[in-house]
Length: 69
Image 1 (spheres, helix red, strand yellow):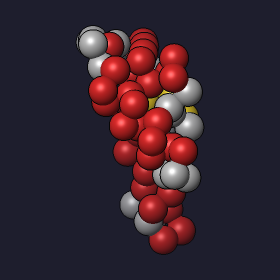
Image 2 (cartoon, helix red, strand yellow; image 1 turned 180 degrees about the vertical axis):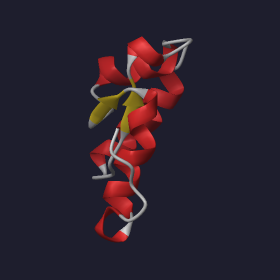
Image 3 (cartoon, helix red, strand yellow; image 1 turned 135 degrees about the vertical axis):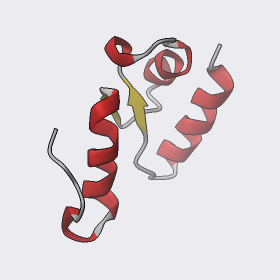
Image 4 (tube, helix red, strand yellow; image 1 turned 120 degrees about the vertical axis):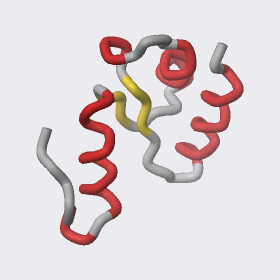
């Protein structure tokens, strides 16, 4: 379960894209994030509640709108 998505995420990472996977502790089903972690497809592995603030810090000017977890 999750291998196809993990392979796609790995292709994105290899192309220089910031890739993030959800950590095991906050997943209901750890299939795709686990596969991504095993393939080294995720630049970062974060709890669910830290993903949106991380993306805001990365993509919004000056992290505008980011809320620190």
